[in-house]
Length: 57
Figure 1: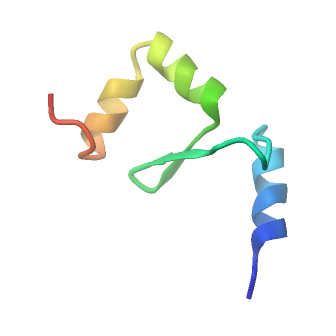
Figure 2 (figure 1 turned 30 degrees about the vertical axis):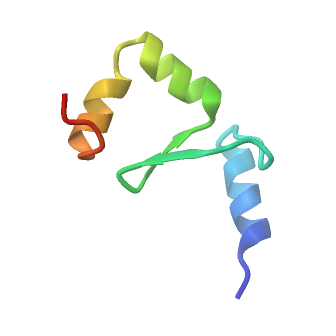
């Protein structure tokens, strides 16, 4: 079963445009580019990446 429309609606409710790339880290929705940039500016992105095993610095 194709759940594309359902997923698009859920993303829209979270403030993400269905046409924007959406980022998942460690299986968890982070959001779109604005959310990722906000995490980066608040120095929260690297710890999330490390916990997910996506960064080992």
